[in-house]
Each structure stands twice: as structure tokens, then as C-alpha cells.
Image (cartoon, rainbow, N blue to C red; front, side, top):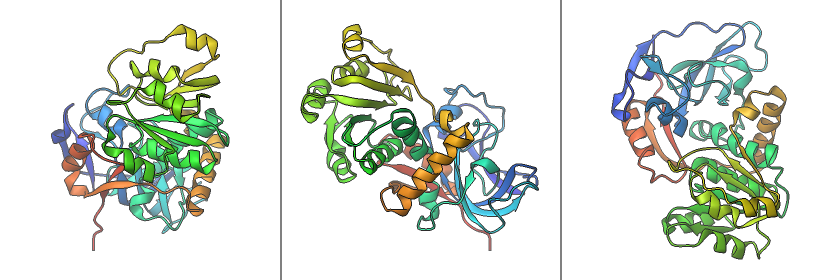
Length: 333
């Protein structure tokens, strides 16, 4: 028997429990992993609260990120072997391979050997944030040296990953956050400029920070009315990638900036990268290269133990964190 974090009803973190579960031996295309650390994500929260397109079946296990050691592999798996230190790229629907447990199955195509310099906690914090940011900025956004990119929700794990990736390719990351409280931390994390939406005019400040040329790319998980302000500071032929809906309000879309600057606005989900083997491998290579060169490094805000899953998610949902929230998994003696 192993242990897994599950929920038996839709609700707040208090519905979470740690249950005994059976984990079968890996079949073809699967890897069995003894976990050491687990990354928490907003998608996990949306799933548990009934705000995700995936439908839970109770009792429902979940979790998208894990790092640990390989315990067994399916008959056709050759790129990893027993004892390898690995982590898992979120590459399947939430319901297929839940990873918040001490012994879990994962799809072999999503199991990778991460850079040896990473701690377990950092490895469990890597793939959701950095593949999401890579897909938006590099794979789809074609961000180039010298381009300015506006990154909303800048203090989130994805926002911080996007800042690092933009710097890695020589672009200019401008972080957008709600209050000025996190300004210095975002500058320390590599942002070329920071805009606090509570106290600053987003359009005017973006134009000022870009010398009037505007941003080439907008990378936005918020949506809502703020999109109109962002569009007022775009460069010609700019791209707007919306990858979330943190705002519950509708988008107001002004037509004139759209026409004047020939803007492309599209929805984005990291599945665009992770469901394509070729694009996934390019993402993994890019990110591992950045980690090994010291250019990409997950920022971890707080770590909890596996038994404290309720408290871990309460903290994540408080929206005060700067970077990733992680759970560590005690090892049996």
C-alpha cells in the first residue's frame, strides 16, 4: 500500500485527506516513482474546487508535478532505469496520472532526468512553470533578443520562470503585479521593470518602460478588463497569449489598437507543447540547458511536509506566495 492525497468532495483545502491506496506495477509506457517532493499548482486547486474542465470522480487523487527515484519501469521503457533521479513533466489530463502520493505511476514520455544540480524540491518545481513559460515565450511567442515582454501575475511560479527565460534569450521582461509590495523582489528576480496595477497606469508605464515602442509579447494568465490596458502599449505585429482566467470579469477588447498594430490574440495551454513529442523534447532540452548554465532556477516560497497538504494548499490559495509551494515526502526507514 502507498499513500495519496485525495479529495472526496468539491471544496476548500479542508476536504483533502491522505488515504491508503494500491499502486499497480508499471505497464508498457509507464514508470513507477518513489517520490521525494511534490509541486503544487493552480490547476490542482481549480480541479478540487470544481472550476476545471476535468470532472473529478470521488475519491479523487490528483497532482501534476513530482520528483523522486525510479522504482520500476514498463517493459518498453529504456531512457530511465531503476534508481535514476527523475521528475515528471505535466503532460496528461489531471485525472490520468495523479502524482500527489509517495509511490506513483507516471507516463514514461513525461519522465525526465533533470539536471543533477537540482534539489528534489527544485526538480518538483521545474516543469509546470518552465514548460508553460517556454511554450508561451519561445515555442509560440518567438521571443527574440531585444523584444519587450509584459508578464502579468509576475510573482507566480510561471511569471518568475518567464522572467528568467526572457533574460536567457536577451529579451526585456516587464513584470506586472497587483501591489508594489513585491516590486523589489521582482527586480531582484530579473525583471527589467515592474508595474503595480493598484497604483500605476499600466498603459502609460509600459510605454514609458519601452521607450514608446511597446511590447512585442503579452503573456497573461489574468485576462479580464486589464487586457484593454495592455493592448494600449503593444508594438506592431505583437502577440497576446492568454493562458489563464484569474479574473472573473470579461475581456473588453478595443478594436482600434487591434487593427492599428495588427495584433494576434490567442489562447494558450501548455498541452500545445506537452502533447507533441518533438516540441516536448525541445522544451526539456532548452530548460535543462538553462538550469545547467545557471540561468534558470526555480524560486521556492515555502515547503510543507506531505502530511500537511491541507496547510500547503491553504497557503497557496492565500495568494501571498512569491514563487512555488512544495510538499516534501518523508522516506520510510
